[in-house]
Length: 80
Image 1 (cartoon, rainbow, N blue to C red):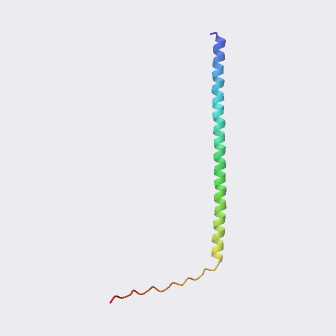
Image 2: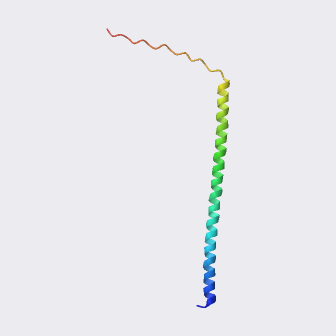
Image 3: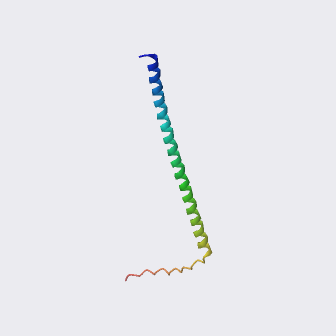
């Protein structure tokens, strides 16, 4: 093996390692972007549900409440 072959082999290994590391970094970036999208979607859904809940609570407070009359408790029967 000549010194140039050794250098070429080392260069090829280094390039292979670099490409592998670059592929990992791009994969991590895609995962992070997906996670950001998921978190943003969850925050939007939570905000929408909060608005719906607050609107319902406001509507419930605006309506007069119906008066519910309680029935008198039944008297226990005496055994003879």
